[in-house]
Image (cartoon, rainbow, N blue to C red; front, side, top):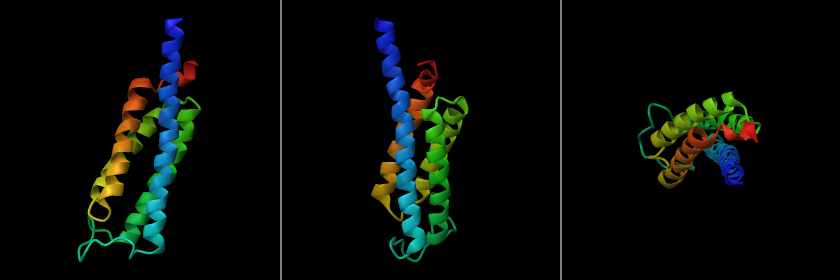
Length: 132
């Protein structure tokens, strides 16, 4: 009985990771759409972030958002490649948001924390969803 309960907890972490990926993708999409629609939303001063203007960063966020959401749905289906792509995309998302810190520090830190939790969940508990 204890083994079944342990598997249930692990499956819960896998579902949590998948749902969190979809949520993080939605967060990224909001940031991206805001930056694309109106690049005056973010004040960065006279400097651009990593040689891109805010509108270009909006497109980067939007592309990452779509990929993270698709990987999240793949994780929810129990696919191994969804876990691998999910970890890689969470790492990319964390780096993108680290570079976006000057424009919107609180939001970027929130998404970085979510990305770290996603990476932890997928690496430690991600494989059990397929077994359930």
